Length: 131
Image (cartoon, rainbow, N blue to C red; front, side, top):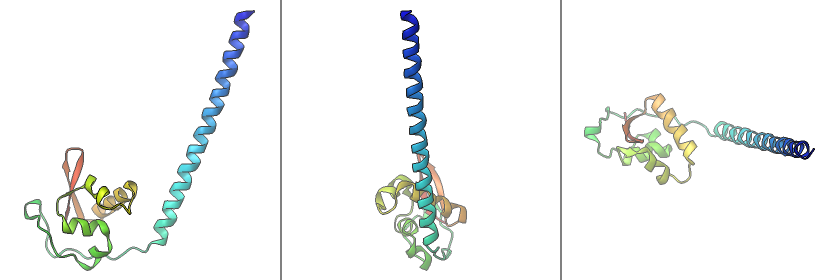
């Protein structure tokens, strides 16, 4: 009889903690959905700035500061890369406190996809150069 009662108590506690974990998971998913929706509304409210191509292709060997083009001035990441060619991506996060890490990563990914910058592997990070 004692073992049966102990088994019932353990089953009850297991079910209780399972319900708590499910509720916690739902709460986390709701927070993530709200955050994603917030980011999407922030992105929609910002108007994309037209980018101008740099006059000559840049290579790591000729990495010297260049004069920013008109579109570069409006993008803080491009402005930083323009002033510090070969800047490490992890340093970009520290240099631009107005952007959180996810926003900076997304902007860098978009710039790479658009062909505005190129990334060169450096350990666990990347060096960033204008194209």
